[in-house]
Image (cartoon, rainbow, N blue to C red; front, top):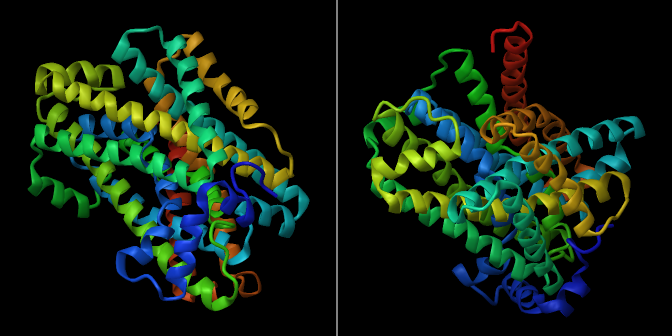
Length: 437
C-alpha cells in the first residue's frame, strides 16, 4: 500500500481533510447542490493536469510553433482530447478498485511482464524529471542570473518543500498545485493578448490535419509525449483510490460523475494552455521570420525585442510555475510507480535526490538543455503504450470495475487512441533507424 502520498481515509480526516470528506459525503447524500456539490471532488485532476503543461510542453510547442507556425495545432488538440479519455479512465480505475494501476499490474499480470512494465515506467519517470527539472532550473537561471547547476539544486529543495504539504493531507497539496496551474493559465492569457495571434489560422489549423517532413513527425510525436504523459496515467489512479471512498456501488457511480467534471475542467485548462503555447510561438516567432527558435533561452531573449520585457517575464514566471509544480508531481508519480510495481517504499527525499541526478549530469556535461527536453518527450511517447494498454485492459474487466466498467464504445475509443500512439511511434522509429529523422 502507498505510504505518505496516498493515505487512508481515516488518516486524511485526522490531518486536515475532514472538511473536504464531510462535504463530499453531504454531496453524495444530496445535501449540497450545484457547484457546492462538485467542489469537494475537484483536485486530483488539477494535480494530474500539471503533467500536461510541464516544461516539456514549452519545449515542443515553442519549437513546433516557430518552425511550422500554426500547422501542428491539430496535434495539440488531438493529444488533449486523448488526455481527457485516458485520465478519465485512470481516475475511474482508482475509484472502482481502491488500487492504483501499478498495484493492479503487480497483482494481475505475470511477474515478468509486471517487471518489464516497471522498468519502462521508471525510464519514463526519469525522462519526465529531466524535462521538469531543466525547465524550472532554466527559469531561475534566466530570472536571477545564477549558474544553471545552482538553480537545479534550488529547484530540488523547493519541490521537496512542496511535497511536504502532503503531511497536512490531500487538500492543501491539491489547492497549492491548482493555484500554480492557475498562474500558468493566467500567464498564457497575458501572452495571448500580447502576441495577438491570427484567430482564423488558429481555428483552421486546430481542426485540419497536416504532416510535413521528418522533423514535423518527430515534433508531433514529442507533442503527444509531452501531452499524454505516462506518469500522469499511473498517478491519477493513485490520487483517487482512497480520496473519498465509496461505501456501495451507487456511491461509486455518483462519485464518478463528479470526477468526470474534475477531469473535464482540468484537461480543458491544460489544453487551452498548450494551444496558447504553440500559437504564441507561431504568431511571435514564425510570423516575424524567426523559424529557428530551438531553445527556451532563445525564446526568452527573442520575446524581449519582439513583444517587450513584460512578455519575457510573464514567460519566465509561467515556466517557473510549471517546472516547480510538475517536478513535485513527477516525484509523486515516481512514488506511486515504485511502491505499486514492487511494493518497495523509499522516503520522498531519497526519490527526489535520485531523480535529480540525470538532470545534474546533463547540466554538468554541458548538453544542450533544449535538445534534452525535446528528446525526453519522445522517450515519453515511446513509453506511453504500456500504461495505455494495461489501463484499457483493466477498465474493461467487469469483475474489477463493477458498475464503472467501460462501455464497449469507451474501450473502442481507448484502443483507437493506443493505436494512434503506436502508429506515430512506429513512424518515428522507422525514420530514425533509416537515418532520415
